Amino acid sequence: MDDQPISRRVSTIASATPFHMLQDFFHNSGYSERRHEPGVLDFTFGDPHDRPSEAYVEILRDCVTPQHELWFAYTMHDPNAREAATASLRRLIDLPFEVDDVHLTTGGFAAISSALKAVGDPGDEVIYSLPPWFLYEGLVLEAGLVPIKVQIDRETFDLDVDAIGAAITSRTRIVIVNTPNNPT
Image (cartoon, one colour):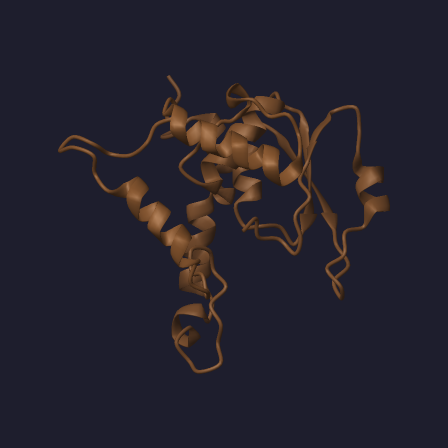
């Protein structure tokens, strides 16, 4: 019997896990000492600087107000949520989306993880730009995929389309286009 405390799969991604990277950032950088200084802007995830529109806040409030004592939140099977998302996609990008085309998640981590696993098989490649959003590598590795990193222009944050093209192989299944690097 192997005396390894965690699976080989998990051990290959342990150093790239999102929470390991976050812990490293919060504890081993100057962030915690300087984040409240005047003029320092906090661009870490989950810390928006602008308030959303009041109409959006009201819709969110309605959606999260408990419907009964056992209620938690909407589910993937809530037809109203999926129908609303479908109608919005049709209107915004003028493509013929159907309700069955829409998959709802609880946030960006789950959405990206689901997309990676839906499109890629273990060993397939995912191309994304450097610097990346801090979670890409962990999510890619957790899905069993191979990260292929392409440097962006450090001055302008422009994508290097030629470098992305050169990185594409027969194993490439996903190209994440996101710049400068945060999916919000």
